[in-house]
View 1 (cartoon, helix red, strand yellow):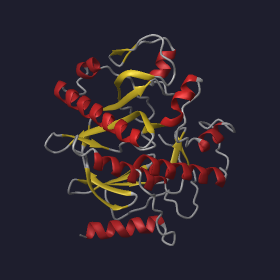
View 2 (cartoon, helix red, strand yellow):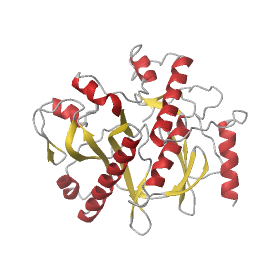
View 3 (cartoon, helix red, strand yellow):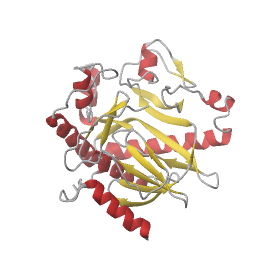
View 4 (tube, helix red, strand yellow):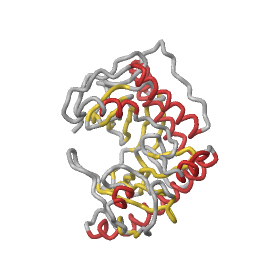
Length: 325
């Protein structure tokens, strides 16, 4: 369960989302969702920065970056698999199909990397070689390219629980997916990842790993949902310096957005203590990195909205106009 705290309320940020005219509200860590009676879902990406099971602050333009980065990738992968996109009435808002989400989250990994308990680097460093239904060779080093991309599925944890690693055999044995669904999901995820790596390489980037979520539409068709290849769902490295840093045993250059997280962790136990006031400079620095990530990943120029109109008022206006139609 996310612990709430007073978020940074600087002008130009979208932290607490209040849209009382829309039904069936669900607030996630970053996105607020509203389910409409006609089967559409309104997904509003806030600027909340979440870590340590709580919201730390609001980072200007973060929600817009996530929505518009995912929009780019949904557009350029639509030939690979269907996605949930219906419309974009606002830079922070996606109107999508409401889906029955599948209970398996797929991470595709092209490199031996990660820091979480379910990451392949963590497991590999513990001496494990057989994981997620695949066996990795001995002698790999941190951040090394794998012989081929692998699928590392996990169960979707309930609030307060942790995701659990799954093998394809366990997915079928537990009845989480049918054999046909697993085959389709696997093919979609690997094809999406290959497209992502190819387009990222053209932008001077390495797509090291990424997360995908899928759901079923009313006809039982598997549809890509949530987000795709964003700075929050994916690990991007800068290709120009990768080899030299790998040979030196250093971490790859990336879009390091962890200034706020690191600052907080150095000053308190973020799971138990009151969070100290976060400096404005750190928040601005994090915002700049998100914008840099958007522009590098997509090759597009980030367009900041009119600062004269509060973000929530703009979202309300654009949704009123869209829903009135």
